[in-house]
Image (tube, rainbow, N blue to C red; front, side, top):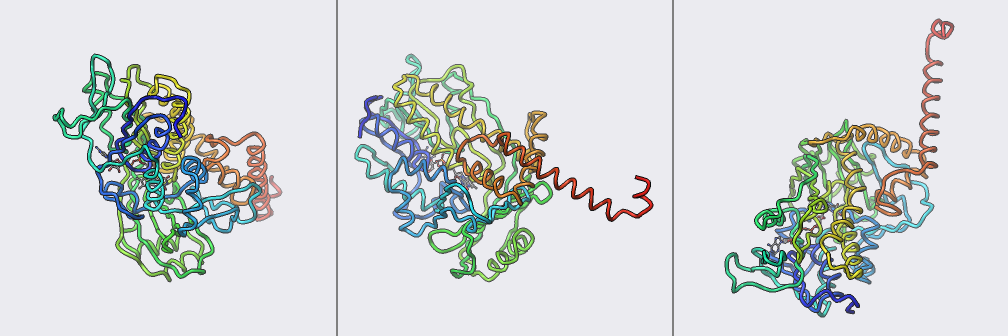
Length: 465
Ligand SMILES: Cc1cc2nc3c(=O)[nH]c(=O)nc-3n(C[C@H](O)[C@H](O)[C@H](O)COP(=O)(O)OP(=O)(O)OC[C@H]3O[C@@H](n4cnc5c(N)ncnc54)[C@H](O)[C@@H]3O)c2cc1C
């Protein structure tokens, strides 16, 4: 249904991946027509695509992302479950969750409602694409966009060229959305148009992915999500998700430029080190499906459009084209769904400076998540960056202590699980009560340790104390 705030007749979206489809959904309420251009072949069903190579690796959909996508495309979650997507409803025993070397003590019961869904990346995109295509004023065209058309006199983008240098291939639009992912060329175009490039915040995470699909007979593993994140001392992690096709996607990753396993035998050996025996034994008992897939992700990147003093109207960057997060934390798709919420709010406000309003809103939602990731990467995962604020390592160490306490304190583990899932707040900052429990727990451990040391010390030393 069209909204009261009509922003124009035609909007163009470049890229029909998750960000582009979400943008199209939001724009369809405010523009007469929305055309989405995609250069890649789009399969009829849930299948991997060449232009989305990351889709072959484990993708965790955060509980917050599931709720946001459902808000955009009502009925999505039920349809996914009907298609076999595993659903985790308040069942902590479905999750084995290790973060930075600490296995969270969520095995008891969760106090608050927590529902998560485990679709593969191709399945989620296909479900969303199907829905986007049923919106009457959205059209998806399979062709590449060469570049936006820029009108220097009006300082605005007025459409796109489908063929470079060919004015006859121009398509006019009131708004163009760049949802072309991490490889976006918008910074180059901005420079050509005289605006300069946005500055970039980057963290060199040096992540290397290696994934194998494995079929494990039903019933052997009760968990549906198995995560053993990398830690400072053990820079290789592993994630195993049971997907809708009944196979486990087993992704291993090295952080800080460490090479992950290169074959299934090496994956088994890593699982022996990182997982409880029942999980690693189940993995060994499984049957490999298909070939290994590999992917390198050297750098997390936030293009700071929010800091540009001049920006043309008629174009907005969206999704990974603005910010791509360390994928091992599983936040990219959810943060894209949050950007969609920002876009909706900006369009509903009726404000004419769409790009400025959106980049400010997205800065607010990006900053807490980006900053906590950077703290984790730089303090705990051997990443490097040009500028490292002095307090990062201190906060990282404190957080490591918090995770230590969350191994046995169920309330702390639940708090972490919810914040990690981007529920409640985007800030990973414990309140005073949660912090108090952490300190109490760790002081208890310290005192017990001292007592043990005293008891085992020789009598002579004890007298002299
Ligand atoms: C290894 C890896 C693992 C990840 N794991 C997770 C995870 O566990 N959880 C999570 O939430 N997120 C994860 N992510 C992030 C997630 O994949 C992205 O956030 C998500 O795909 C949204 O990206 P996007 O739509 O902005 O861009 P993309 O998915 O990169 O899509 C860009 C699209 O634009 C099209 N395109 C580009 N140029 C043109 C052009 N000129 N004309 C027409 N079309 C064009 C491309 O063909 C492509 O379809 C991971 C990422 C990586 C790299």
